[in-house]
Image (tube, rainbow, N blue to C red; front, side, top):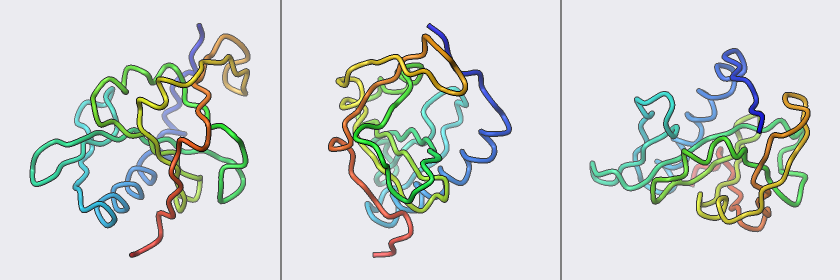
Length: 145
C-alpha cells in the first residue's frame, strides 16, 4: 500500500481556511464550539457542547472546479481511518473556495467499499473509501441563518 507524501505547502494553503470555515459554520448552525486539536497527528477539530467534548471533525479540501461535487461518490483516503476511531467523528469535505462543503459520519465512510484510485500523487496501490454522495449532507458554509 502506498500513501501520498505530506505536502506542507499544500497543507498550509488549504487546511487553516477550511478548518476556519467549518468551525464558523458548526458554531453558527449547530451552536457547538470547535477547537483545533493540539495533537497535530489527530483529527482536525474537537467539538464541544457546554464545555464537554461531544465529537470530532476531520476536514479535507477538494479542487473540483465547481461549487458542488460533480461525482456520485466522494473518495476518503484509507490512510485517514485512524482518525475515525472516536465516536461522533464527522468528515467535512470543502470546496477550494471554502464556501461549500459536504459532511458525513465517519462510520458511513468506514462502511463504504475500499477501492484503488490511481491519482496524480500516487500512481498505484493507494486505497480510498468510495462513499456514495447520498451519505453526505451538503451545506453552504456562507449561509448565515
